Length: 160
Image: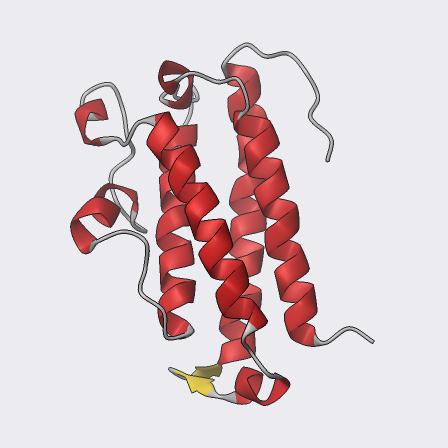
């Protein structure tokens, strides 16, 4: 029988596979392409998810992958990365490597959780609430990468 943490782990496995597939064979310049309407580029989304994974790691007693300074351009409410401030963006190569590193650390931290830990308070909610919410948050942004891949001219369908 699956435990709730097993389902959360599975969600992070799914979204990681989607992110890897959607960013395969894209260039750094591709990752900076902007939609013709309000939204964030693929570079920002990947960085934002690494920041989000850092929050998850902190909740589980582990240090985040990035410092506050590294995370700043990708935090919630940060300015979109555009041609005017692209010098603040991490290279797509670094984002891919840091996504890989964060995956190893997130899975290891999640695997340490016992069922009773999920009921522990984190702020005004439980750990389970926040882990579930962060898994959904990642899936939401992973879905956005399909359109951004197409914007880069790939004209393909990536199915996981």
